[in-house]
Length: 545
Image (cartoon, rainbow, N blue to C red; front, side):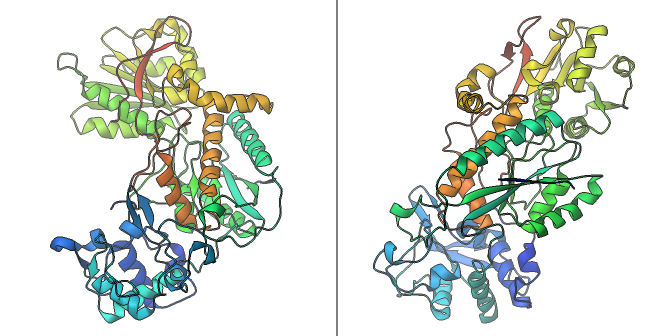
């Protein structure tokens, strides 16, 4: 269903206390913040760094000692290789002894333990200070022993009990609610292509029999029996970016959602990114050329860094050039109000640290490209952050001399379909932050076959393939979550499962390690092989700048 509206080893600590805890999470007292600070940042109530000792006398301090590093943001633990970190939220610690998993009325998570005495506040404190479980037996050697005073211990135990008491937004007995967000400057053709894929995917997902989902027990036999209808809400923003936060608040209040799926942006995605981080809403793989990432960000995941990655690829190519052929000056051209501005700024910052002079020319709407190119005369490298219409217009402009290397944004220009005139092809290199066409073909054929069978017009190949990939990643992850509908846990499960994904669309490999928010990390510098056509030749192997 669609609704439209206009308008550490596994986890990185977050920089800020989440909004739900900062507001007290129904428990307005200073201990709420103290418990969160200990768990997430390794900071005691006094402000001093948390201290702990592990087997063999290994000492941990501050952020390195924070609980979040192993038990993760959700408190639901993790599994990595042969090591399993158990869940430590209240309902998993305090549950009565059970003979087997089938007797537990708890959603399954890796590391859940049934046949043991329930913890009490006293035995939780003993486990944290002395490394002994609820029955007095030693815990895993991975569990540090913490030096906490009574007040801090009370605050931390209270925080663990609160972790799973928040009712998730957008989750009903028979329905899971998701939103996709579209900015007012998003490309209308890409918008239609993305929505076609989302609408059809949700329709297919909802073909299965509906009905109330019975309480699921935590047996592996029951793991995949989640049965909820998916409902998609389309939040279309209007006006300048300064007003988007208020619009998003209104949308969320009217239509609570469990996560934001895909989405489409223009010049900036920053207000949406900030909103999702503050409201603790997973934002899964939006189609944006200028993604956002900062220290401590957690909820926003991207397939690629977009033009920012292109800037890194171009910078690496320039800086790795031989001394005699080294670039001393760079001239960039981009249009005002477009994604190229962010790419140009990133490239300028990277090159200026190495003493390379960088100049930029901003084209106003309707301004001639030929005039701007004259300003780059005498530079060693020309960088074009331009759309297909401007790229095609180069045909009426003489190509620069052989001494000038030309780089252009592949994402903005249309990748291998960029209408680069033959006279410019010899000297021009494309930043190409996806896999080569012949290498990715087998990974995208399934998606394009799915489009064909369902009569979805292919109008924006990468956007539609990336949207289909995002839907598949969400569906696969939810199938492993059973009834554990916690936003943090959704993000963590995606992190864990992503590297095992075989069909990765446009990208050769997707991974999200601790603190990483961009799943594909490299690309190519390529050139056209012929005067006409779309065949590409890479200058080197896959590069991770």
